[in-house]
Image 1 (tube, one colour):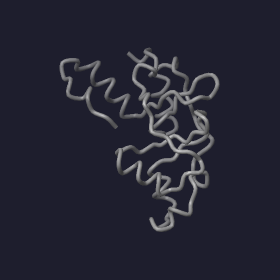
Image 2 (cartoon, helix red, strand yellow):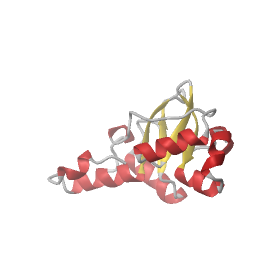
Image 3 (cartoon, one colour):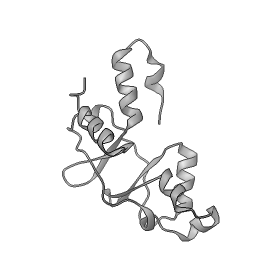
Image 4 (cartoon, rainbow, N blue to C red):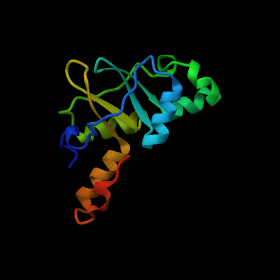
Length: 140
C-alpha cells in the first residue's frame, strides 16, 4: 500500500502565492479555502512555503499584514518529493520531521502538487475501508 507513488494522492490544482504578495493575501487564502499550507512560487517554480503556524508565530496584528511580504516569513529550505516518490517515503518524512505537508516538484523544481498528512490518512482509510466513500470527497 505504501509503495504507490505520491502522484496518486497529491493535490494538483494548487492555490499559490508569490514572494511579493503581502500577508493579508495569505490570510485571505487560508480563511477562504480552509487550507494550512501555501506554496510560494515564482514563474511556476517552488521557492518557499508559508503556513498558518508561520502567521501565528509571527505575533503581528492583522493590521500589520499589509506591510509584510511573504518572502519575509516563508520557509525557503524545504523538503520536497518528486511525483514518483512513494507514499511510504512521504510518511517517513512526516514522522521524522513533524512536517504536515510536502511540496511535489518535477526535476526542474516546478511545483506539480502537494501531499499532506491528511492526504495520507485519507488514502490509507480508503484502502482499508473501500466501501466508505464519504471520505473520498473531502478536501483539506
